[in-house]
Length: 535
Image (cartoon, rainbow, N blue to C red; front, side, top):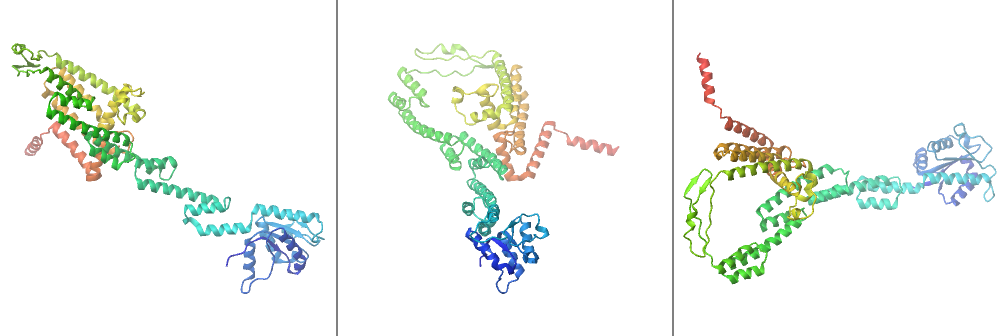
C-alpha cells in the first residue's frame, strides 16, 4: 500500500481537538494537506506510526496551549521540526513556550476565530507558505523518490531522460544527468570498438576530449593508422587493381580512400589503353598506331607510337652498337672507324669512354647527394609534423603547386625525407648517407668496388637491424623511429616469436655480427690455455 504524504503535520494536545479543528480546516482551504488525526490503525505501534507521519510531512505546526506545553508527545514532535528547520509554532492560550522553543518566533493566535480579521493569522499563514516553498511539496518529493527507486543505477538513457522531464530540478536530477553522460560515452565507445576504425576512435576523442577511454582510443588510432599505412604502402608498391580493392574493402573510410579510388580509375584506363596498344603493336602499321594516338593522345605509349609512325614513314635502319674491342681501366674503348662503311640513310652511334673523369664526377655527385640527404633528414627531425599532412599522400601537384613546406630543402626535401623515414627505415636512414659517402670517396680515389664492398654490406645489415630494433622498442611512438619497414617486421616478429624470441634474435644477431667482423680464433684460445696447463 503506497504511503500518503502531507504538507503539514499538526502537533497538538488531544484535549484541544475541538479548538484546533477550525485551524485545520482553514489550512486545508489554503490547498495544503494536513495530518492531525491521532487515531492509528489497529495493530500498529503508536511511536512508529507517528514517526512515519513526521517523516512524510514537509513541515510541523506545533499548537501551544495550557495542555500541550505539558505534553511529552507534542514537545517531542515540535523538537523534531526544530531539528529539521521545519517548525512553525503558534499558541492559542496565554502560555509561555517550553524552554527549548523560546528562541523560535511563535504566532499569537489567542482569540482568533475563523472568518474574522486577525493580523497574526496572516503572518502565521505567510510563515507556513514560505517554509513550504523552501522545502517543496512533500508529495512531489515522495513521488520523485519512488520514481528514482524504480530506475536506480541500472536504468537506460531513455528512462533517465523521462525522469528529468518529470523532475528537471529534483533531488536526483544531477545524478540522472551524470548517468546519461556516462551511458552516452559508454555507447559511443562501444560503437567505436565495434567499427574499429581510426575514424571511429577519432570521433570518440572529439566528442569526449576528457573521456574515460581517451588513452585507449589514441592507442587504437595510432595502431590502426600504422596498419592502414602499411597496407597502403603495399598497395602502392604492387599498384594493381586487387591491392587497391583490398585496401578499400578493409578501410572504406580510410585516409587514402579518395586516392585509392583514383588509382582504380587509372588502372581501369591503363588496362583499356594496354589492350589498344597490344592491338596496334600486333598490326604494326601506321594506321594502327594513329588509331591508338587518336584514342589516347597522351597515353603511356604515345611517344612510342609517334616514333613507330616516324620510323615507318622514313624506313630508317639502325646500325647496332659494335662489340667492344678492348677494355680500359675507365671503361670500354670503341673505334669510330666501324661506322665509316654504313650505307646511305643508315644511322651510326659512336660511344667512347677513354679517361677516368667520369667516375670522379659520379663520386662528387654521390657526395653531394649525401650532403643533400643529411640536410633534408636533419630538417625532418624538427619539421616532420608540419609537413606530414602534405607529403603523406604523394601527388605531383606537391612539386608543381604552390605549397609551403617547413623542411629546410623545401618540397622536394620534405618528400624525400618522408620517403626514407616514414615509408622506409626511419632514423637508421642516416646510414644511406654513410653508404653514399663511402661510394663517393671510392669512386674519386679510383678504388675497386671489391675494396669497399664489405663496408657497404656491413652498413646495409646495420640499417636493417636498427630499423627492426627501433620498430620493436618505439613502435607506438608518433615519430617513425623504425619506419614502415621496421614497424611491419617488428609486428610480424612479435606475433610469431614473442618478446623473448625477439630478445634472443637480437642477441644472436649481435653475436653473429661480432663474429663475422672480428673473426676470433677460438682454436688459438684453446691452444694457449692447454700450453699453460702443460707448463
